[in-house]
Image 1: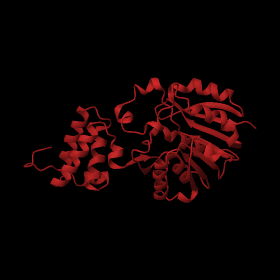
Image 2 (image 1 turned 180 degrees about the vertical axis):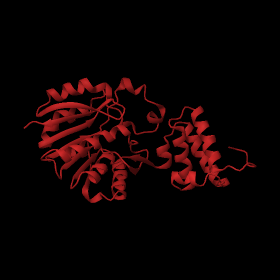
Image 3 (image 1 turned 45 degrees about the horizontal axis):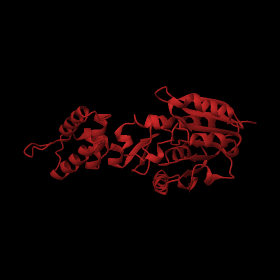
Length: 293
């Protein structure tokens, strides 16, 4: 990308960068190239294809080159552009919050459908523990009619991102954000849904985590202790204290934890009908359990 005498059109930049990312083993190389270029040019990705012959200025090329080199060092493209997609929204993200994953959309899809078809779950009060960017809380506030959400996180910086996202998505008045450890900020309250995407990567699995996650995303939002269950365990054991009847616990887990988590849910007081739902990749990723009558 250094030949100043050659005109670098949008098309040429995308082709070159896609090939470069592919050679470096970057995930979704074409999409990553599009996201970075549309960010530098301040246009929607679709506009890149409406004006493929638009030449890039020297300043644009310099800014683009810098982002491309950071991406090649495995800095996540979502952080480089400052936003990430989740459930048909575009959410602000920075290094204080996890980048929302497609598997987490399974939680939202389940709750939206369950609330719609299950007696007693209309207009629910929902708890979202470990809210991070606010992705789950905001998606549910938007898609579950008359719902209200209390969202907790131990990180004040994460909550600042979540509040900004709630404002942007026009649901801020339906979500209360609370700083504190796990369930502590909602002590004494009861909910139709207790939802969480807690840290759950075990020490053994941490060694296998890709550098774009391990080196850039907030470690505290990822690691769940020796067995990965340090945060999952107290949520399951105390869930019945925070659930109305009817009420439901819905929690993201690692696929490798299915058996351990089901055993925990079967042994926990006040829970029944425990099952683990599959995500978009058919992996067992979401624990669901009902409050005992």
